[in-house]
Image (tube, one colour):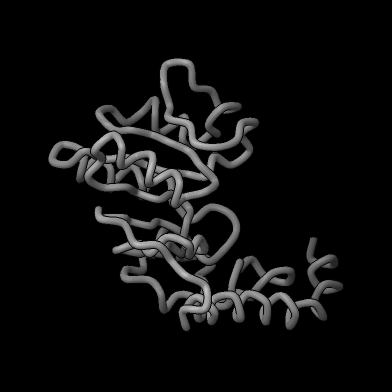
Length: 187
């Protein structure tokens, strides 16, 4: 893997530039973000791999679910279905993905949903009178203008010591951390 990353080093400027340009187009308003009339909390990271997003989503849900009608919305990574799906008694990892299934089984009194189109997913959840939506792994999903962006980074490999893909593990340049309202350092 280290050899592959060294070989990939010349491609960093292209990946960095594309990612930076995309974010700049959002920042300047050339690409629009949609606001919703309810609180949206985005939990994400700058890197690929685990930073503790799932436990953070569970923690936030447990703080809110007794006082507000709460929903989680994920892309549904590795699911075999498409479109908006609310978890029910028949949900499997194939229909909604591993982490949403974990939320559904572990967290009661919430709605768990998946949709790659987060704007559509939020609109669908609003039909259920949801009062707050927690977006799982959506820091790079800028089509939604979240009211609170929580960025997670690991203590052992913080984002500010890493590099963008393909040499490092960052999905976007370090400067993306400026969009975070809160940065949480995890184990």
